Picture (tube, rainbow, N blue to C red):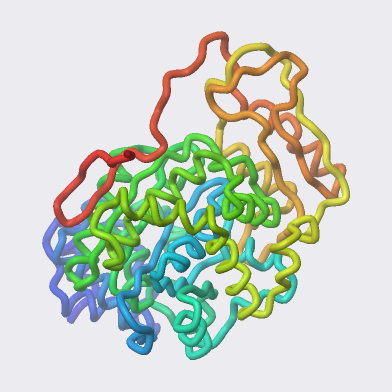
Amino acid sequence: MNVIEIINKKKNKMELTIKEIEFVIQGYLKDTIPDYQISALLMAVWFNGMNNNELANLTEIMARSGKIVNLSAIPGKKVDKHSTGGVGDKTTIALLPMVAAAGLSVPKISGRGLGHTGGTIDKLESISGFKTDLTIDRFIEIVKEIHCSIISTNFDLAPADKKLYALRDVTGTIDSIPLIASSIMSKKIAGGADALVLNVTFGSGAFLRKYMDAIQLGKEMVHIGENNHKQTYIVVSSMDQPLGFAVGNSLELQEAISLLNNQGPEDLMEICLFIGSIMLIAGGIVKQQKDGIEILKEVIENGQAFDKLKEMVKRQGGDQRQIENPELLPKSKYKDDIYSDFKGYIHKIDARSIGEASMLLGAGREQKNSTIDLSVGIILKKKKGDSVKKGEILATLHYNDHDKFEKVHDKVKSAFDIRNKKPAYKPLIVALIDRYGVRKPNLS
């Protein structure tokens, strides 16, 4: 088999066979095919895409390039939740205790943040002693005991994807939707869950800017999941403003804790209830979404969801006192407010600018090996549609370095677009995709 012939085949929009794809992936892993030839193939895929057969084959080969986690020791149906990320997205931290308290087993292998979006693992490491590098055996044991655990990818999970992603990052092929779909789904399949619920975000604070790109990605991931016998649901939501009010690791953790105490932001609660109810359907706990939402509201109101978070923290070595009293979580030395220069309505908040400002304060990584500051970030005081007076507070910056504060002050202020007229309402959750196609969400 000849890699140049394979490159030419894809360049001419022809379908690659499973043997050709496997030849390329194995050759790249073994270093018998060099970066520059894989780069050429990736660019051909970027221009010409992949059909469903190619996509399913590529994903399965990448998933099986490393360890496939065996979760059969955990009773019942296991459901995994994933998000393509965004600014202020602390959904996983709030959601997993909720669905676990409802009786669903959720083994979650999560990642760290890079750039303007935060990572679940980083946020959880704001808790003193919290261990995310557990062995698979201990991970499974915790899920059997309390229905949920969140660990980092500290083992050989889809190594082909890891190597390909690094190359895509430096060859301008990150934004290929087929390659995004296969990257995400290879890790999900290797993770071993029976069903998948994935939140695909779009907008200024998301990886994908356009709604139709989010729909296309969702469709392709559903096809891959179903082809691999994984019941798959995609929840498409807007990331045109940060989710909730908090952006930054310990600040977002505090907001997730507030939600579990029934005091969280409305938008975060909305998406947690929606995604959570779909997870309960996927896990066979309920048949209708409205029943799932009722159960989730109940476990928040009676404190079971909050208790479940404390149980998970305890079993993973964390300090439960910081959950009971979030004031004990990492705090910045300083905080200062950003004030409005205008009167009117918040027409838009550029989520990417807020995320980048938080990163520049130290809450995120500009490079993979960057050290993050768990205590810094931004608390929004206004959201889209809110009225604002001249001199009123738009946001509060939590920081440890005065130079960094000066660097981001204007960036945060200019992220708020203030106009005379109140903006039209746009829904947070815009579509649900499953094996039956794309439909509008039922928010009742």
